[in-house]
Amino acid sequence: MQILKAVWDFFQNQILGMKWINELIGSGLSAVGLDTTNRWIGSIQFFIYDVIKIVVLLCFLIFIISYIQSYFPPERSKKILGRFRGIGANSVAALLGTVTPFCSCSSIPLFIGFTSAGLPLGVTFSFLISSPMVDLGSLVLLMSIFGIKVAILYVLFGLIIAVVGGTIIEKMNMEKHVESFILTAGSVDIESPDLTRKDRLVYAKEQTLSTFKKVFPYILIGVGIGAFIHNWIPESWVVSLLGSKNPFGVILATVIGVPMYADIFGTIPIAEALLSKGAQLGTVLSFMMGVTTLSLPSIIMIRKAVKPKLLALFIAICTVSIIIVGYLFNALQALIL
Image (cartoon, rainbow, N blue to C red; front, side):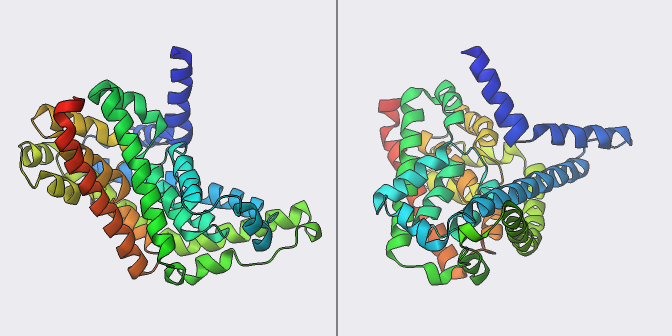
C-alpha cells in the first residue's frame, strides 16, 4: 500500500504537478543570490512555474485531443456520444473529472479541447466543475483530517454539483454563448481515410498553435493575479476572518475563496487551520470548493472561451450550489464529525 501511495504521489506531484520545475526555478533564483522567501521573489517564482506548467498542459492536451479528433469527424463523434444521454452523459463527465487531478486553471485546456471536439456543452461543464473540486487522490487526505464520512460526502456533493450544473447549462441551450473560435475548431469535417499520420500531426499542431495564441494572454493575466494572491494575502488573515460561528460564514468563505488560486491539495492545510480555529465544517468546505472551482484566474481564462452570459451562469450555479452544500454540512456537523 505504501508503494502504491508513493507511486501516486510521484505521479501527482512530479508528472502532473511538475513540482520539479518549481524546485528548479527556486534553485536558479537562489543561485543568482535571490531570496525565495521574499514575497516579491516568491511571486516571481510562482508566476514562472505556473505559466510553464499551464502552457505545457495546454499544448500537450490540445495536441493529443486534436490528433484523436482527426479520427472522428463531427458526425462520427455524435454517434459515439449518442450512447450516453442526459444526466448519464453528465455523470460520466463528472466521474472523468475525478480522475484528472488538475487545478481549475489546468482543467481549462481539457474543457476547451472537449468543447472543440464537439462534446455537448453541458457535458464539458460537468467535467470543468468536477475536475478541480473532486479529486480521488485527495480523498485520503480529506479522510485523515475530517474523517471518512465527511470525505465521502464531500466527493458525493461535488459530483452532484457538477452533474446538476452541467445539466442546467445543457437544458438552457447556451451553445451560442461559446466563443466562435472554440466552436469552429471542432467543426472541421475531416475524413479519416484521406489523412496520413503526418497530416494528422500537422492538423493537431495547427489546432494547438491556434488555441495557444488566443488563450496565452489570459494565462499571463490569470497566473499574475494568482501569484499576487498566493504570496501577499496572509493565511492568518483568512483564518481570523472566518474563525467564528458567523451565520454568514458560508457565504463569506465562498466569496473569499473565489479570488484565491490553488488546487485542492493547496487548500487542505488552510482548511485544517480554519477548522482548528473554530470555523464550522460547512464554512471550511465551502471555502475549499470556492478556491478550487471558482478561482479568479480561472474565471479570467475561461472568459476567453465563453461569452459573459454563459460565464455568469456558470459562476451563479457553482456559487449557489457551494453555499447550499456549506449550510447543509453545517447542519450535519454534529452527526458526521
